[in-house]
Figure 1 (cartoon, rainbow, N blue to C red):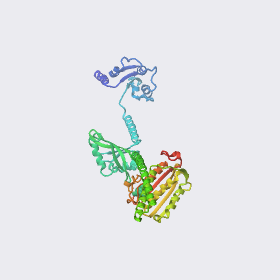
Figure 2 (cartoon, rainbow, N blue to C red; figure 1 turned 120 degrees about the vertical axis):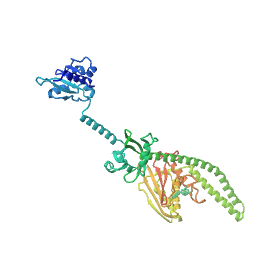
Figure 3 (tube, rainbow, N blue to C red; figure 1 turned 90 degrees about the vertical axis):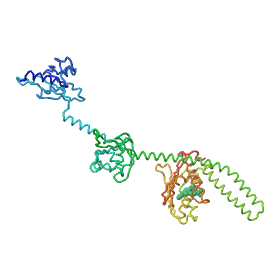
Length: 496
Ligand SMILES: Nc1ncnc2c1ncn2[C@@H]1O[C@H](COP(=O)(O)OP(=O)(O)OP(=O)(O)O)[C@@H](O)[C@H]1O
Ligand SMILES: [Mg+2]
């Protein structure tokens, strides 16, 4: 038996507790409670617990007291769907109080017992871990975490895709330094520890190359952080965003911008050339006319008539150049008809083949047999082929292989003509200028540099595209695309 003093201390201990403590009868009447509970629910002694705590007319379905009475042992209130701690209020656990006489259950001690059991805590921890793991694994960016020594601790699918290492490989054998070329991993850690790259322990939006399994590198955008425990560094974590698509898009955009600029430049140069050509046309006509008159009307000494003939020849050369300039500037009239491109190429070859420049050139024709007819001005297109083929023959210095290929584009809307030669190629810095008027690498008097600018103008005017590709020291290929319908044309008046 306890002394009065012991009983007194026990009551004071229960009152000192910050948890609810209620005693209910087997009829669910609240018999007693500690001070803490009385503070929460004043005036509830003598009332029904289900009524007073939950506003119910009958005992709760998942009542711990009922369970404890049935089992004759301590019981835990069952969780109902959606139950939270708030729903359990004050009676999470129920401990039967036995009668001292006959061992029957006399009443129930009900405790909220907020602290979760160790198993429950473990379960919660497991669930949180699984959630975090899923979060990391399903991230579209690569996530790599490493401990202080560099050993990989976390490595997700996206990191595997970027680095081409498997997750197992990375976790079993790799070190964070294996993912960066040279001394870059050290450099990154240095930046992470500095204040200058997004704050101490952080590195924001840092462009760096990642080393893949087979040695190639790919550009990534890295966000990284040091993981601290207190003030101690325990790990580092990096989020890797593959930049290949973005960089490609950027470079395509720059290329398109460049092409637009080039087209604009060509168009203004064209207009300027056309203006000059018009101005020159009349005086050149006058020079030719009067020179001819002098030759016809005067009996000239041989020397003098030779000089006048020279004037006539040079004036004719000037007129030819003027004509080409006007052509380039699209000032001449067009005759658009459906034409067979294979035949046009064959005709141009026929004209050139017998010239001495072509004697040692092997010609390789690969013409598509089901090429549809294309609406073009045949004279202009012949001119295009003639210029490109002549350039090729000149580049090969009369010795090499000339390849001509025709085909249809994948979407069937265009005809593609490829003309390549095994000449010395075009250096990269020259490649971007070859379509500009007056750009030539040929000796003075051997080339005007107007050939390709004219070709460019004609193809544009037909709503087509032309591009040149070259491998230095090896070959050059010109690719022409011509649309099959007049409506497909991108340019302005493509023919009248
Ligand atoms: N197939 C080719 N191989 C190597 N370089 C080439 C080739 N085609 C063109 N080029 C380069 O492009 C330049 C420009 O060519 P373009 O036809 O416009 O002028 P050109 O041939 O020099 O003179 P023109 O054609 O007026 O007589 C050439 O001078 C040459 O440097
Ligand atoms: Mg040329």
